[in-house]
Amino acid sequence: MLSVSALQGSGSPFRALALDWDGPHFLGSKPTVTSSSGSDDPNRTPEKPASDESNRVASVTEERKRRRMFSNRESARRSRMRKQRHLENLRNQVNLFRVENRELNNGLHFLLHHCNRLRTENEWLRSQRTLLLQKLANINQLLLFQQLQSFSSAWPCHILETE
Image (cartoon, rainbow, N blue to C red; front, side, top):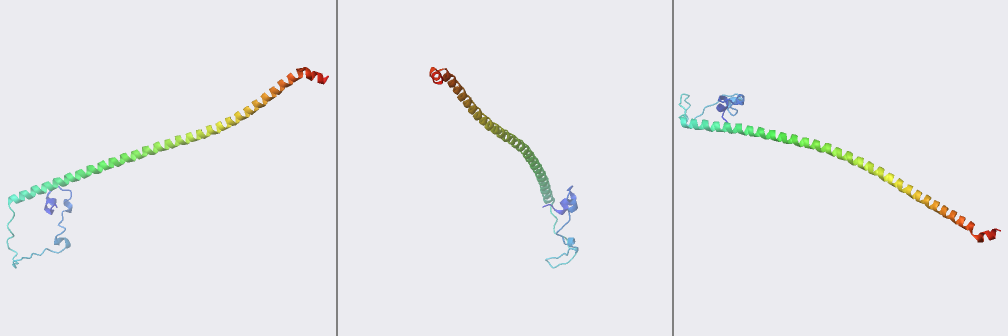
């Protein structure tokens, strides 16, 4: 976790938030100094300051953390952008599929209508065929009857009966 001093001193965009939120002064009270030795001497010297080596290690560690945080943020940003592009591609595909589906449905309705029209026309043609076959059969019977009549009138037996 970044320390308050690291946020205040760095070029971090969060330096405005670099308050010691856990400190007692945040709640409006002054910090109290207590000592386990029982001495309340304000002039007492603090513990030995950390060596330069430990400061350098801490600063390197803080720099690594800062770089890692920056890298993680950039990676997350790229991931969000990839996800956004992917979602946009999926939306585009959905729109294309909707258009294609609408065109296929229109084509299907056209073909069904055309098929029904052809079926109706086919039924009409079949009924016309039946009527024409019936008329042809009637005409053939009539012609046959006329031929028979012409033969029967030419027979000599028919002539004798009529005389």
